[in-house]
Picture 1 (tube, each protein chain N blue to C red):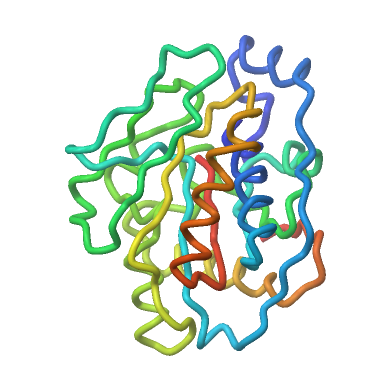
Picture 2: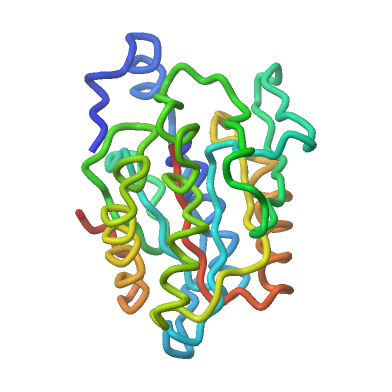
Length: 79
Length: 159
């Protein structure tokens, strides 16, 4: 449900004129909700940015997500 | 990627029968370099501070309210405010940056990769099987706050 909720909140932010990108842990959900931009990550539920106390990995995932902001929506991309 | 095959039978059955809601949006475009953008964070990890009201976990439709998390909060005091068995809470409890990366965005701002971290973030409880109120009311309310804050870019994380 979290992945649907993220996409729906994301739509509200995008409609407010804010460029948005989300992390997805369930690609099949995100493909149905189809938010503006989503990065599908290979991590388990509960670990959207990879690992706890792993700043390097968290940073890499965030940078990959932010890179999608330059693309034409909708974009659903694998990390 | 999380696999549905790994979820409990109850969750699998629910997810297979559930009619997911397609999001409805018009594209917003970046009008300035990321290095000049104010970044807002949103998570559905139900993170909250000890002095904030808990999310209501007894509602069948789910609690679509949100908590504002000040960026200068002590991250170590944040707690995961829902007890969904569908995901492992331990990582976010050990390191809230895993879902609400306040420290990471501050680091990227210090390096000049993004402009700055907004002074507040938005925390929702993601388990909302009937999201009508989220769509009509609470998500637009959080978005309006972000717009008023001057947020240019939002990064959202599920758990």
